[in-house]
Amino acid sequence: LVPQTGDAKVTVSQYNYGINAVARFMLVSESAKLIPYADLFTGMRGFSADMDITPTTKQVGYEASSSTNLSSATHWNYGLTLGLMYSITPQIKLTTGIMYSSSPQQGLIDNVKGARVQEGIVFTDKMKTPNNVVILKFGLTVLVSSSKSGNKDCCCECDCHHHHRSSG
Image (tube, rainbow, N blue to C red):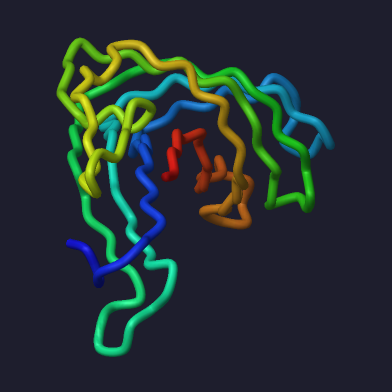
């Protein structure tokens, strides 16, 4: 939806995301300052293409901006991550790594790299989602101990992944 008449900035973005069950193998003690690790994972990954429209000059009685999902696709995936954790505190680690994700499934989403505007209309081509993806990741890992008796820790991780963006 166009929020109003007149010129506007149109931004199309492509995101990838996932939710996975992870087995993490730390190659040194979790109390070390720098911890190399390897993850094996399986779960769901998704791709989303979105469009945001922000008018150059806001008109009274219209939305300041609007957003819409152009397309999305989800797949089962599995893979491997190799990375490093840096201890900020004993329970909080800065995490970075290279993730390889594979899926036998494919879907179609809008290709934002080729987005173009013709006569005020945004056009995109469709593209197949990739079977194999290499992702640079960074984030925070929080170790949550299940008890004080020395049992294994549970790991909660929040990561950010690379995404594509095109503006016009």
